[in-house]
Image (cartoon, rainbow, N blue to C red):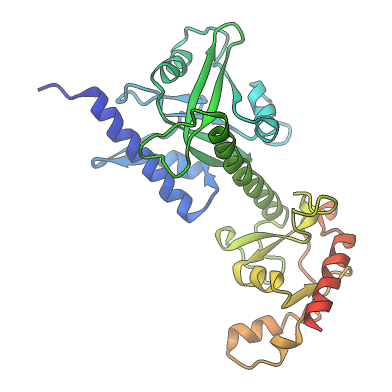
Length: 312
């Protein structure tokens, strides 16, 4: 009895979506190694992407599974316009972003897969590069338009809570809501990746070298339109506990990069973890590799004044 190709496609698609969701529970940043491992389905592993191309359909599936935009390494050649423009478009758009065809033949196989996904409203995965070797997976995305003359497709985003059903944003308010969710994730991930990379993957207070245990702490919150920009000098890589202590004003950093532990913590006696935090008092933070990435002194001065007012 022949296999129902549509049913097989649907099962494989949901397996890929679920695998990507689980990766996101570990970290918002998916690595090149994660992509190379593919996704499990019925005792086998299948690719999530084509490592050499941005448009991918496994041969076992009827329809497009994923598209990808990489983040070029410094000095690397930019092959497609969407590599340069996708982040800007995402932050400026109200609904859709452009995705360049593969090559200049709209009838090439890759581009036909885009057209097919558009015609059948197939939910897909969009892997968007946030830094060299890292990406964010947006599920579900969908092909919202396909234009032969401009050699471009339009990409929209669906309900992030409804990836199993593949629900689409069929009206402007729903599209804007979905897009804001993507914008927020990209903003957070791009900022985090840049800050952690600047410090060679280590906590600026403890030296902890495991990136999955690190956050990029804002010195000035991004709601501050003057000083809260998502730039490396407004961030410090901190382990989860140090980040929590920094945000709660239990640890402060002055404009000379010295650490100050609040009286509240210094007066407590409760085991080695607390003693390690107290031992940071009057030390200097670890610096990033490049001097230009050091925390901005003016921002630190503003934040340290907040610490002094709260910590007493």
